[in-house]
Length: 235
Image 1 (cartoon, rainbow, N blue to C red):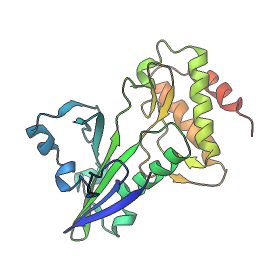
Image 2 (cartoon, rainbow, N blue to C red):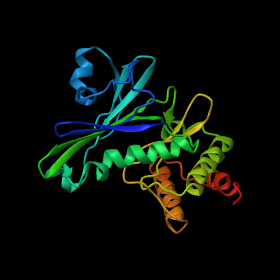
Image 3 (cartoon, rainbow, N blue to C red):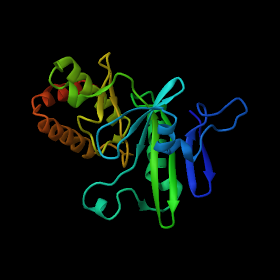
């Protein structure tokens, strides 16, 4: 994967140049790529994901993309739902998440292929969005907990361990950010604010966060099998 940048006025774009170039080498991307209304006018919105921010599923040639705008939660959203403090494009949440996802993808870890990130400056603030390739047939672990057997749950734990061994501190590890496809392969998504770290207490904190998430879905016992799968991976 070869990442490249493009600037159009106050719009900064980071994209996968290997998949977004035409025969002449010009990027087939621009500010409209991140405009939901642009895709709606073309009749190429195929669905919408639940949750804050209303991610859209887009028909993009041979692939299907997920367009996710960045949205704030909690009390700060009352002040601004979509604006963040501008400190430079490379330090924006979208650029940082795309670069981290690209790194994990290059390691062969089960993550969606990143496509592009945008940061649009508005004076001292910015708005942002991210596009990744959609994982077809994948559903949130939260939707599979009612029929998940110990083998699948152990696979979830082993997958989390692979990411931990790569140094990923996933600050929002929960049953909605772990996906399971029709082959029962496990994927991890949503790396906003995540980072690479040396081994430490954050690994246990990630697992405890996942356990709390399972409790919300009345699936507390599932954590035992997940822990066994996690511990089955040798250092």
